[in-house]
Image 1 (cartoon, rainbow, N blue to C red):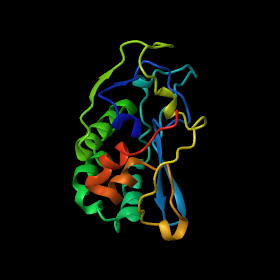
Image 2: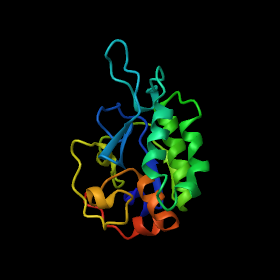
Image 3: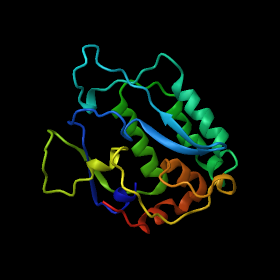
Image 4: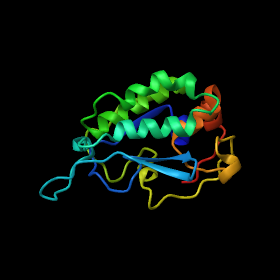
Length: 191
């Protein structure tokens, strides 16, 4: 979200081939035992062929949404701003989800509204290997993630685990509330 906080316009890549182990379907939160991974399960193609990001369906044969919501409630109920935002966020965990991209776009929209992010957004119409635009697509790849030196902020379990970096934007939102966007704008991103 730091990269987005500085942008006037955000172009969301939807025409690429879906890649495993990216932040498109996963995020970490701080929990009583340290980091907790929230993973949105996806349906893989039956014949093993590649899927475009825009065509990936979520796997809804078990209640992953309610599990994620319960994990967030357990982790952040005592944070300063959980109760302030929970009514706007709960539908993301109760409304049925079919496609991963649609779910991610809805999350982006809700978070942008809550933190006051006003960047214009659009989606790609075709995949470009090289672009004249500032390419941030690599930021979603968890395996090639570059360490960031973001300023620590107060976290719920900081006394137990120290500051945990690179968590879901929800961690920042629940702990910093209305200061979330200002915090993001004060950080420097290593590319």
